[in-house]
Image (cartoon, rainbow, N blue to C red; front, side, top):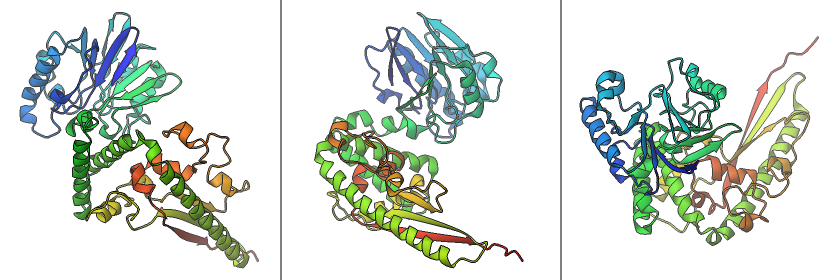
Length: 415
């Protein structure tokens, strides 16, 4: 990831896991930062010293004014034999472990966080440092719910201007900005493993790699052998690749987006009205003191859409995997949930679908000009932004189904 700061071009990366030779470093980058996990993603600890040496040889040859290195959890020699590991670092590479450096007016601090912190590091981090570098993420910031609480408290206290980290492969390449700090997940593993940079320039290779990813997903799903770390990466990588290809030509799918959004609105309205009718009918007959809660959920159709332009023998198997809540976690409860009673401020259908927001509403990530008059539903953007469906997975769906669950808690009559 390239960051321009104070007349410098800083290229930050992590999680190369032995694929560093595939890394494409911009020629004009003059500061390099590696946030750890240069060693292979395996358990061959007896070869770690050789892995580290190969990486350091490669890293020291990269043209730059400054090369910074912060070890990761797979660079285990820094934990097993730290004295030997430190000796291996060439003088051309700056090792930062709970230490900092200032270079041409830019301050850097590397804190040990592999994957969590166990030391009182916060007492040493300079307040307002330009770049804090760790291997692991802070809690709540591109961390896939695996971030470090201690690191989060440290950042809240020291308020670095930038935080560079990795470890969470599926969040690689993403940034997030708060009032005080910009967070960069610079993990490169998925991109390097699947030749992502080359794929973006080669449609045939891209489709072939996507097909291979899908075959891996179907195989794992059919064997019921879901490995969260591995398969979550596959799902996210597939989604990101397809979306980047498709969204570069949004005008080609705009009619399908519009038609899907219209069908989704009709399905939501039918579920909304049905849920309220059922709840009102049950409430008329409830015994005094009973508490009733109704939950309605809407799902995409069970069958892989026949409108989808890409067909094949395994498409239904892939669809089954994508629609499985154990795999596609944020789809576990469907496109949305409606719970009744909805409190003293009863939600209108417009509020339920996000249509009470002032325009432009719900077109983040899409072309604002193309979608400005489309009134895309909040539930559309749940699918688009938060689940592991690629946009072309769901915009061809025209059939939906809903589930309504009723929970009755028996009350106690007085007298």
